[in-house]
Length: 142
Image (cartoon, rainbow, N blue to C red; front, top):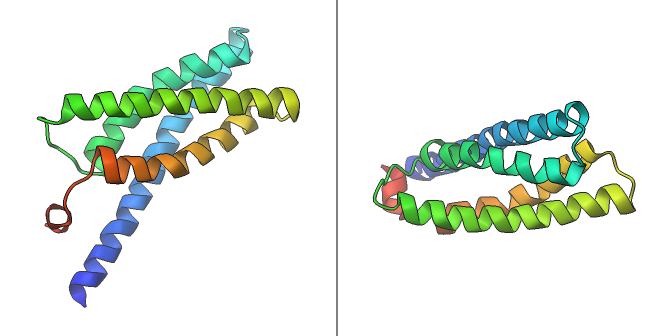
């Protein structure tokens, strides 16, 4: 019973870390989106692409080393490449969602980014957990 409770709590903690890491990366993303769009006067889609790229490094580092506690340096390059592919796919989806929400549904671009980011984050959690940073259950329990 204690083992089951420990595993349950470990999963809850991992989810909380994922949310904190994601919110941190999202804050970097949205902060730069605002800076580039409202302060520098860039077109919001260009700002969205650049800010998404800047948040990539923050996201990968926090997810790998803190959220999923994956310190395997031998897999770093492979994980980084797969994470990059997922991120680029997410960037494409994010940009399309941003365009549709802002230009078709007249949603404020910051709110549109929050909506798009939240939807993408839900899908990405499972990709990160079970594909990119997957560790056998025995290692997770230690």
